[in-house]
Length: 134
Image (tube, rainbow, N blue to C red; front, side):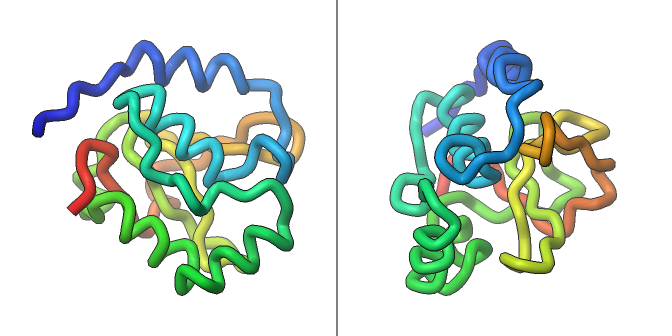
């Protein structure tokens, strides 16, 4: 099955949450990644790992074997060099091993302390395609 990406919907989502700070209840890295995938493809592969509290996230991710393993079960891993606009990037995170961001092009975007956080593409240590899970 071929997935057609809706980049306009992705850009609208990024713009919509541009000033929104990180919040466990509704704007953290997994929720943002899930919303980005859904905006582009109309499907939510992150069901089951989107949490509303840090405690819930820690418990759920422990059951899943960590965030990396959880995303591996839901999306197809690709080489970071092959990640296209809208794909999901993993960047190093001291607490959870990785945190998720969305590939914009030369930058990655995700929730930050006061608004969107951007990092250079070089910060990406792993990536997943939004097109189809294995």
